[in-house]
Image 1 (cartoon, rainbow, N blue to C red):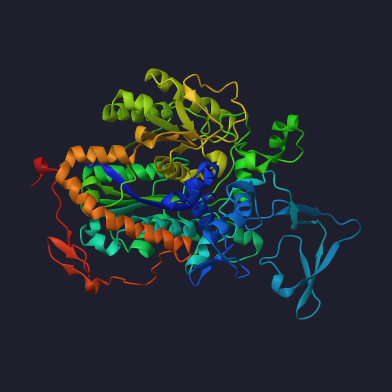
Image 2 (cartoon, helix red, strand yellow; image 1 turned 120 degrees about the vertical axis):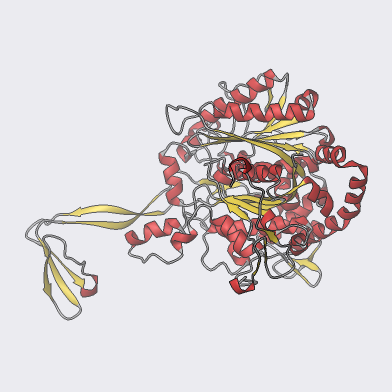
Length: 637
């Protein structure tokens, strides 16, 4: 019996806010929500953005005035909306009007040698050719040059790109725990993993009494590693800025460090670990590892995640040099007919519209997966299921950056699996697609052609397509995590987010069988059984995941496990939901901090109990069997 991977918890942070309990999703569809849901999410964002505080049983504004949730939401809604989602890059990242760089200069003497004074301690060693050095005093020397001098002068320039999807203004993931100069993506990963664990409603130590430590896995990574000054970026820049490389910059820059940090400081896990890297498909690569582990029975619990934080001048200039980003001048050209002379930062990303490039975003997202039997046994919340993730390369390519045929395979296999699992009717009338939807001219053509062709083949007349990068930007390796968190929100609230920058569909977009809407699409969640999550990565990294709705998942579990098991499940589920909702209420009051256990509960070698058959860690966890089934009985001995 192949086990079904069930989504029992999720969390994260992106430009829309906190992912757990659908708050990030709600920010995308704020205008169509009921008042209670809308106010809860606005309060959550206000607390994250340090616009209010909770004291003595009341929310209070900065002047101490007590406010009801409704009053707080109304007072700060305009500011929250301005300082979330895609917007002009804020100075907390960098000053787009004054990006620092070093300008190379060559000085040539006009008449006679070039002379200047220099402190003795700044003398290069060995001396460059042609330098003549004469002491002035104990601290200074005179340098005489006859052939000129090359030097770098600190300078500034205006960034070509000034739009990005940034975390809500005022939210600092490093302030929620002793971050000790961790790179931003790692800070975000710890927050996201903590949010996902908190959303479970199940105490982690209680889980370890049911599941052996080696039946747990963590698969998480960053597609580009940690490129800010506390990671690889700072290590590479330091020598050219006259600074020393720190002992932390290199190790903290590794792409798989998010998984390492979650194991070491969030879970204390000794289970399986890893971090796949597949450019913009990275999240789905990690999800595939988790899904295959659970389907095979190798693991019963898997945390899957990705984090990306590369809104910095160097990375953005690199993407701009490729012609990949929507530059300010190009955005103005697109809107010249509207009389605009400045870029419309809010509308920088325009999937399936006339467009000019993608918009950078930042995000960290985590899912918690249980196998179906464990989910029922623990009374876990069922947010959906992931029966498969398809991954394929492009084959021979004209350009490493150009699209290929691999995405036809991934979408085709995911849809064929959905048809076999659900039947043709549910695929045709009860599914939709979360497009990669980057907002580039190539993507709008190639991805729409793939979706349109398979919609025709399966008899789908108007297949709804979402493209949420128009709100969030492109978070590279974490992008599919944003899409999944949004899909889970659709099943809770019943609105597929519209592509709000879709003023018109570009002529080269294939859409005869697609439903591309600017406005949100209202649906009946009971009739929506499946969502597809698509990712097209640089270099030919294609992935498509099939997600099943909570109702569809519960129906399948009832058929597999029977009525008695489902009845027991519901008796266990209520307290789990109550504990999960208590976590959400705590977050709304600003009381939740990142789960970070540095140096706590460290297991020493002397604490282990060993035998030829098993290893026992200290504490209440189950023993770890050392003997596994021999995979090669026919050639053993």
